[in-house]
Length: 280
Image 1 (cartoon, helix red, strand yellow):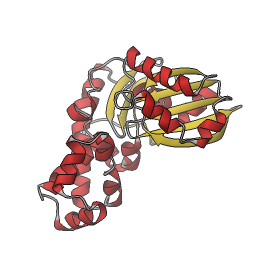
Image 2 (cartoon, one colour):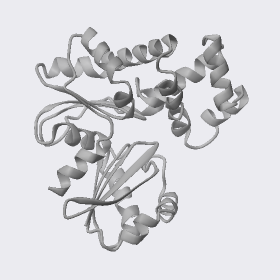
Image 3 (cartoon, one colour):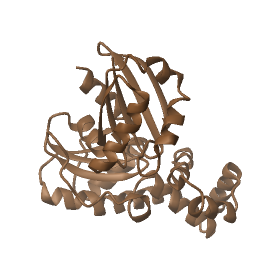
């Protein structure tokens, strides 16, 4: 029995398989080692009956997590998970590695992540090429759910949104200025709070103002991540992974075309491809 885990900073998805067939699945808060300590992770694991009931039977766990970008962070996550899954061989890589496997399998290509966070890399068929993009939601993550959340909160607080959207936003979230600033600057898990506003973009996707925000965010992403990578690796296929890319495929493909390239595949939830890859 094996388990595959794909985790952004907001949500971690678990799939458990036996003989190549999925037998159980669940989700939990993200397991980014920058934000989640061992105690918190064990508390979350112990809330999941599916994981408790299968812990002894799972022999291999393949984890791909945002924030697992160094040997130290990966080892921390291995140690924490090992306290719960005592009979499992656990391997941990960052989410970019998982996205590359899910999109390209063993072929070369350029892989972009647009989920709760953002990243991009050339994949040589074995591993992603090192880059300077992964700077997190404060310094970077253009185009991600976190970035979109920051933009919508900023324009809401500045009252720069159209009146109809201001009304919808206020009714849906019932947040005042003080509460928003407190959640962003004082409370823990600010990234999860910011990325939670993706729902508002999805629900109002036909609104011209929302479309403009999304297009501008994708343009920022492409200029920051994609075009420099394409310049270094011309002719390679471009793939995208993540919930933002998956929900706004039409707009992402249109902005890509304006910038002179086509997108080969967009995978909203890479964990299915990862499970297939490691089960066969």
